Length: 133
Image 1 (cartoon, rainbow, N blue to C red):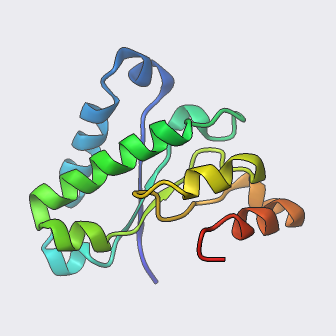
Image 2: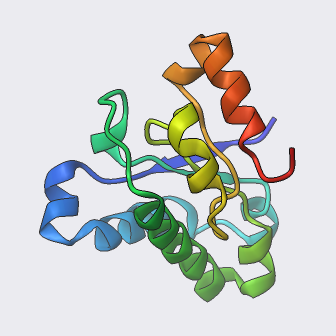
Image 3: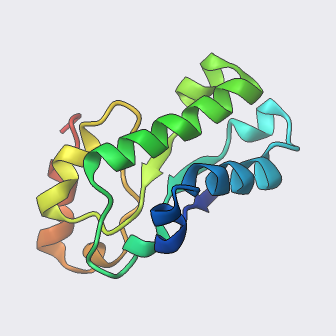
């Protein structure tokens, strides 16, 4: 069993341009007191609150930018090796029509799929969109 730590911002925070500051605070205040061995067992999911269940989604570039930012925070705290090994998932309304492009980004390691997993054809298409398949 692996813990998944979810972080993300509401739309007003994103529009104010303070989303990185908020996510930094969420991660530092929740995870950065644990040692690197414990941290290595954690999966992080970036879930922009404004995209959960709304049908809206971050653009692939927005997802990449935040995932890169999160990976850089981990690198600053625990080093590049652990940052590269940390799984960071995207969890904001991932659907068959956007999954392939989101998952193609270098810092997006996969998806935390919610509602789309309830429809067999959707989850099958999302799984097929992973670059490794």
